[in-house]
Length: 400
Image (cartoon, rainbow, N blue to C red; front, side, top):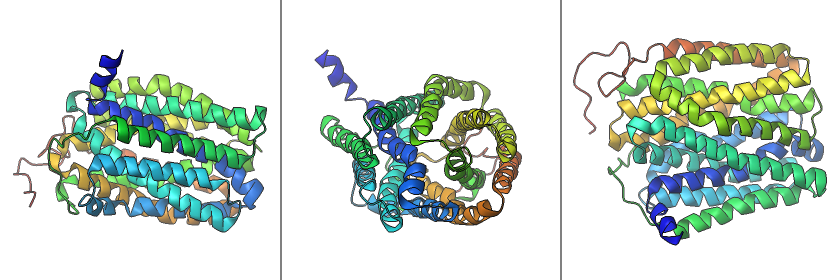
């Protein structure tokens, strides 16, 4: 048994899998409790939740700064530090049940979450082989969904059965993630970089389609992240326990389906996979706009989340066209691009929500339609020098 464990700890993909399990425990706890905690204990309306979500996205907008931190820390070390900060921010949340306190703890949690996600994307694209990257990324989603399943089950049991106050549930979820980050730092060796990463901001003209898809994904995803769950609480009066049960069902399906989606992307290619995602999301957002049945709303939420698993194709598309030394700096730049809209839109949509919730979701359908058009420019076999349907066989830009 011990020799096999020692062998696993020498393989970098198993560190990625361990971190993929740790992150959703804290973030899932924060997410499952947020709407009920904000409404019931901090008296939030749609305006305040929009401001909070915009504030939450500011560290994502500043994700490019990870490049400068790499002068001080190795990517692996910085990823584990970020995971620990996510755990601390989540653990503190329940102890500040007011508007200002929730804003501050959200900012702390968000720094850890977004910097971890940036580094996790960079490390996974460096450590996974191109031939099976989509499948391994699907496995990471499945592992994360399994951990989220545990997290949401913990939320439901502690609230509904043990009747614990929310602050203790936040403390448990954040504390577990923090402990796993410590154990990963102690248990895994420092893995060498396959290719030394550029430690400067990089924007390349030949990556423009990836940047455009990333920007649209950030704009569109905010509607799901911010308002799909809020709809359940405000319109259908779901309790925190019921929200946790919905998340449980969602994670159980993702655990089973995400690896299959990864294999599908490997087989189909990125263009077909993203086409399926965006066509599906258009239908889901239109249905959100007019839904009046809570069970249908739950079904839409779960379907919505399953479609987002197809976004793996965006990452593998970039992996296939990228200079290997560009992966870390481009991951930071991509997260910033992804969060340009995310910083602004939640506040704007919070105001629009007070006038017409349906208009928020219909705009999401429009954003998905734009993404659908962009996805058709992905070639059937993307490579460096063949980044879009419009590409010519001109030499690739130098990396200097």
